[in-house]
Length: 203
Length: 293
Image (tube, rainbow over all chains, first blue to last red; front, side, top):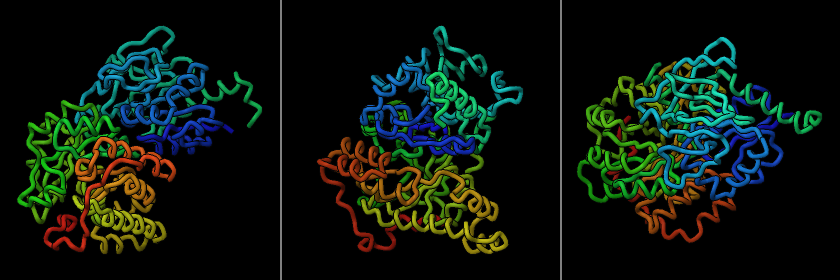
């Protein structure tokens, strides 16, 4: 059985857990280094990227997650999670923690304050014909991508969803709707990774 | 593209879950709060303990102070408006504040009517002592609820009472057949459709934080155990001996609320908590939780 961890330092981690459970996947809340054992993938949820980053540092998860990511461990970040995964952060705090695994530049609070938050339908080819209802809350965007990064979605010419190897990152919140296609998409990535690592018989 | 939908308004509260929102009165305090790991700050003129001590009418903060705080930090900035004072709320909306707290901590401007929060683009959080009060506020458009507790006392007993009341009323609702819900709605003075929705969800339809009297890391963890989605800390931080240390400890205890070893560790050597007040020693007319209805 696949087991996916959700980083539970702060933010909308329960919503991700609910989505994964609806899809029949086992879940684990990740707060300490030991919680990273026996999981096949990890979701970094939306929340405050500065808060989450400080907790990763204080509880020694930063370096461990970076080394896991470098070995191809599947990771999925939404909003703050996308910022955490990025190599560079625009408008971050000086010294703000990031895992630096995704070769993109994220721009924090790119749409401004809450009054500019919005929801909209996005056409996403990889998810099929039905548009995806995307909720953007004080959302970031990706202002620059390096080679090997696949752009999955744009909104008004701004990049809002990307994939690079086993890393999936969205500027919006699929956990705030009951359309779980992105979670299914990530589960497929996790299955692929397990197969590559000879874990497909473990069930 | 749709702005200011209920999903967008309540969505920000969902992003604050598991975090600590700290009262601040200056840009300098806001920076300390952000540095300690606060997920948002609440801008106000005086912390509740000072409002209690000094008396007089407590109002919305000076817009200049609010702006300074907004410029000093990158995390969301909330601010308080008086109950029923929709012009203070409009001013805060014009300042592009991220969340408005229609708060009993300030002196109410209207003793009959709360603000019609549906008409605003910026989301609201409101205080509640029980399920009926929480659902009335949500009915008016609040996208987030917090317990009232008894602000400025450093005494968690009222927040505990309010959280336990709300949670036990929700549990009772789960066991109530549908044909009794209208009577429940009548008795609680709550909108019928929200009673029904709360039963279906088994929780409040919006995020519910604890507030009012939280002063220690263990207080924060206690509220999380009782079902809070996160905590507000008002006077508890900047009325203590070492605000930076205490703030960080409360943030860590909120995340690791299930781990008593960590709560103990972060509570070591963080200086004295605010002195605090016994609720029964407060004159009835100075209780804040009874403001609003």
